[in-house]
Image (cartoon, rainbow over all chains, first blue to last red; front, side, top):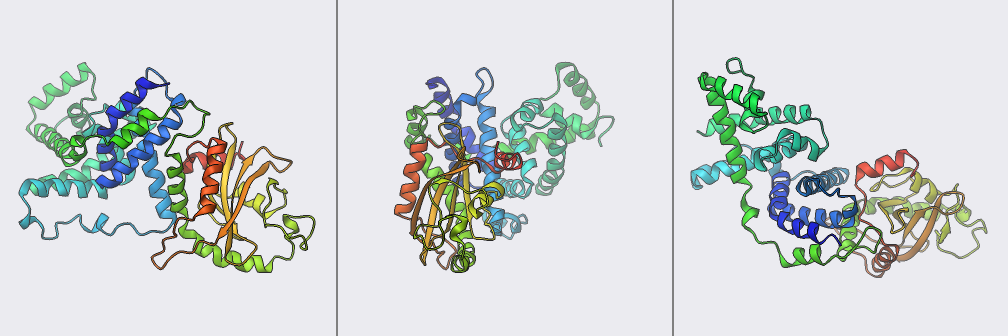
Amino acid sequence: MYDDIKSEMVALVPRLRRFGYSLSGSRDEGEDLVQTACLKALGKLDQFQPGTRLDSWMFRIVQTTWIDRVRSRSRRAEVSDPDDFARVSDDGKGARVAEGRMTLAKVRERMKALPEDQRAVLALVAIEGYSYKAAAEALEIPVGTVMSRLARARSKLLPLLKENN
Amino acid sequence: MPGNLTSEQIAAYVDGSLDEAEAAAVAEAIEKDAEARAYAEEVREANRLLREAFDGPMAEPVSAELRDTILGSDLESGDAAPRGEVVDFAKAREARRPWVGMALAASIALVVGITSTAVFFPGGPDQPAPLVAVGPTPSTGLLHTALESLASGEVSEEGVQLMLTFRDGADRICREFELAGKAANTMDFGIACRGGGDSGWQVEIVVTGPALEANPDGIVPASGPAEDALNAMLDALGAQPALGPAEEADLLKNGWR
């Protein structure tokens, strides 16, 4: 059953991992999110509506899996990795790292410092190339919310790039 | 805000989210507006950098293990859980276990203090039995109260910890719970599903195992035979993946219906 969908799901794995990476800020965690999300998806393939986008459906599952984890961790009162926020500024590594790589590391740090909801929207639009409408459908939020989250995310992200140039 | 265009309009243009007519209009306006052009370039550059920053996983091959898990799982909804599902439950449990240390401290005291095991066993405290029995839960019992009112991860005042919520193969709502066992340093691990007796909850399985205690790092080791027994029960029930907090909260609010 569902062989076509499963093959498509395998093909989607790299993009799902990229999405998981952009949400969690960690490649390992991204990979782990994708595994969990795939298991969840396999358990409810009957809920997938043929003719709709499998990638959107899967992105949504990855995102809810991530949010579940974030909540579960905050319930456990686990203090976030101090690296999450402390490293937004360049703590002197710049001199030792090639310019381009430094920029990308900073982009990742800035991304990680964004609120969860803004990060998910930015990842779908900027990285996945989703239209606002498609992002709204995938995340089950209004298009206006997509736009306002994007605007807020960019207001924090763009100044960094200016500093950098 | 550059020129007559809003930054949102410019961003929407760069993001490819305008329809053809709007896009043409914005493109024309941007041409005449240096400030707007600069902003469009910033957004474009930021998008490019974001793509590049998170591009690493794109070049990695899909592991054979994950590929097999996806392609090899041959289930229709309602069938037994796919291989690997149990791992998911173990993770969900593990994520909640750090509470257990605290719960235990509270619940051991409770067990000592219980004079009315009649809560669970109307037969009276003389009857040697585990604290929780398989079968319908009495609607006045503390297990019943915990099942009804707590989200997963929460611990009742009496020390009943809810671990996770899932639907079984018959689409019943089921919840996994833990509580301090009757004997010292033991715990009862159980699963209750909706649809039994007057109270609405039916305990499907209870297993007693050694108490789980967090090591100094706050990590609770995976339990042995008790967890294996629970996992076997999950398989037998055809457990679907654990529900997320939002879905669980909805059910809780609606009395698990």
